[in-house]
Amino acid sequence: MLTRMKELDGYRILATDGDIGHAEDFLLDDEKFGIRFIVVNTGFWLFGRKVLISPHAVSRLDKVAGEIVVNLSQQQVKDSPDIDTEMPVSREHEMQLLRYYNWPVYWGGMGLWRESDKPQLYPIERHSDEAVEKDSPPPFLLSPEGSELNPHLRSIKELRGYHIDARGSVFGHIEDAFVDNESWALRYLLVDTKSWWPSLPVPISTEWITDISWEKSLIRVDLDPEQIKSAPALSPHVPFDRTFEARLYSHYGKTGYWDRLAA
Image (cartoon, rainbow, N blue to C red; front, side, top):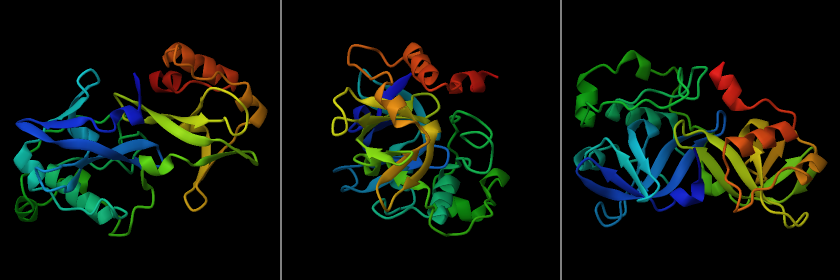
C-alpha cells in the first residue's frame, strides 16, 4: 500500500509505554530511495528535542488512528544519542544510533535494507551508550566508513518545491511523494505541472530519476517531456493502487518493480 508523505506529517509516535511525540520529517537515502529515519519531535515531553527512529523499530502504521507504533520504551528513546537533526547527519552519528538500538546497517548490500527489501523488526537489547562501550558491536554493525557526513541522507520536506528536468525541459515542482508502507521505499514523486500545462498532478517513479542536484533544487529524469504530458494523472477519484501503477509503467514502456521483486 502507498501512502502520501504529507499524510504522515504529524502522526503520533507511540512507544510501548506511551506517547513520545509526533513525526515532523523523514530522512531519505537518495541512492536507493529508502526512508531511513523518522524525525520525531518529542514536544513538551523532552522539551522539544528531536530524535531519529528507524523503520526497523516500527511495529505498526495505523492510518485510521494517525499513529506509528514502535517497539521502543520511552526510557530508551530518552537515553538515545543526542543528534542534531537540524544539521546533516554524519555516518558516525548514524553508527552511534544503530549501535545503541542494535539496528543493522542498511548500506553495503543489494537490497533496499542491505540484504532485504523490507526492514525487519529488531528486538532492542541495548539501553545506553555505556552498554555499547562495554561490548563489541555485532559484525553486521561494523562499517568501513568513517565519520564523514552522509551526503545521501536528505529531508523529505527539502524535496518539496524541487523542479523536474526531463531531458532538458524544466517544469513543475514536487508537491508530495508516496512511500510503500511495508518496505519504506519512496516509490513516487508527485509533480504539480500547472505552471507548465493545466493538468492534475503526475506521479513519477523514483526509479526513473537519474540525478538530484541539491544545489539547484532540481531532479533529473530520463523521460520524454511529451510522454509526461500524456501520462496518467492522479485524480482524487482514482485509487493509487497496483492497477494504476501498471498503467503508469506501461505508458512509459517500463517493467514494474513488483515483477522484479517477485522474480
